[in-house]
Length: 314
Ligand SMILES: NC(=O)c1ccc[n+]([C@@H]2O[C@H](COP(=O)([O-])OP(=O)(O)OC[C@H]3O[C@@H](n4cnc5c(N)ncnc54)[C@H](OP(=O)(O)O)[C@@H]3O)[C@@H](O)[C@H]2O)c1
Image (cartoon, rainbow, N blue to C red):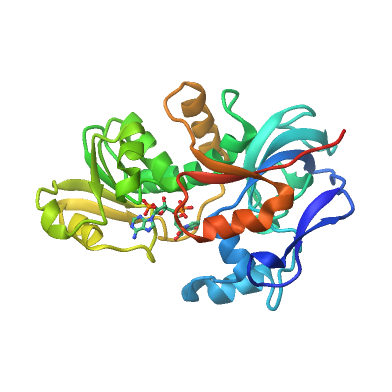
């Protein structure tokens, strides 16, 4: 099968398309014919080993000290169950699924075998029926991150939420989920994304690139969801944080690790198929242009997610 291998940590060019042996499922695994993967912030961290200092030791131990232990990286997949091991109960051949591979990685390939149960090596669910495989990858990654943080923030109907970094993979999902849960939503993004974030349903938008004098009218917030992460800052971000009500909460996407829970993938599927939220894909690259895809994501300007489409000749 075709796969992208990464035999050392480094720039996008370390990724190489190769022919490798197709895996077979163990008795407790499904084999997924992958139709789409994604290039996420996490994939960049893994490939470049640019892991935040506080996670460096545990992550290197898990992923490989001097080079990736698993040469095929890739964290997100959407595809079709091709075959199942004899102990599999949740899925059958032909099911369309989406999920995250966790420390198992391996999504930059035509096939991936993984367990059906949640673990550090991934989580898997039936895919929404109303979106493409590419959109499903943005839903799995951005959706899981956003939903986890919204639940941790204990968002209540009628609350005023500010989503900082509203144009990214998790920000676009956070705006839509918070809106659907009955919040009044303010989205913060750069000038070029103001209309886009409004089109996702945000009641108000704030441009973080303008000087804080221009945002004197910032409201009182019950919850601030920082979906941009610790490295992306601005004066407006500080202003929003200072504008939390006395009982208001600040929840950052970087507060601890992403939980790989298929129950949240199930919730996302229901929200998507009911038409309440729609994952956003900025652009799609074929597997053989993975280097270009990583270079684009590294610029830090993507709107929603970036997908990788994976072709099969059969
Ligand atoms: N805890 C975990 O397990 C975990 C896992 C994965 C990711 N993360 C965190 O999640 C973060 C976001 O990931 P993502 O994939 O959703 O984001 P992303 O798509 O990589 O973010 C790109 C977006 O960030 C916006 N942006 C850039 N600089 C900004 C700034 N100074 N202020 C506000 N927005 C800014 C850009 O919009 P403009 O062009 O409009 O500026 C662009 O739309 C990562 O950087 C990482 O810190 C955490």
